[in-house]
Every structure is written in structure tokens, then in C-alpha cells.
Length: 106
Image (cartoon, rainbow, N blue to C red; front, top):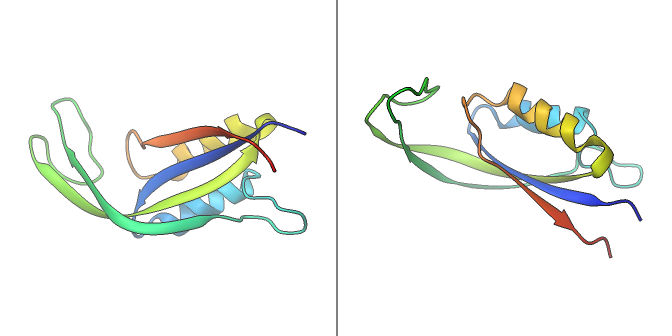
């Protein structure tokens, strides 16, 4: 069986559909005759903008709280790079937090 990865990314509301579509268009979320499969849950992202940053949201030195959606999907090893690249292109943040986990297929 081919190695698979779960990809998790937090995206500010208003950008979630674009990021989710970019992931699916790059091949993430393929299950049988279905594509673009994902799971989401809403939450609040918190961060402080440091000197040297070019924030899409917030100001240098400020603590920020942003309504975000955690998007989870998956892909095979052969397209992982393309999916991560698609996320980075569609995501509004300068440095999106992306988690990648190797998963066992059962």
C-alpha cells in the first residue's frame, strides 16, 4: 500500500474555500470516486506579530486573535509536495502553520 499523509492547516475565515479547493485540485482528499474530501472545525488562532513580519492580519507588536478553520485532508507521498505548495500559494498568511503526519491505512 502506498504511503499516505494527513495534512492539517489552520486558515482564517474567508479564505477556507480557496485553500480547501487548492488542496483538492492538487490531488488531496481522493477516496475512490470522490475527490476534495476534507474535514473542518472552527476555532481561534492566536499569535503575536514580531518585528520583521509582513502580516496579512494584525500589526507588529500586537497580540492577535483570528477566527480560523482547521482543515484536515490527506494525500499520497507522490503528491505531497504539490499539495503543500498549493496550500502555501492559496493561504493568506506569510508563514502558514501546516502539520503533516504519516498515517497507517487500515
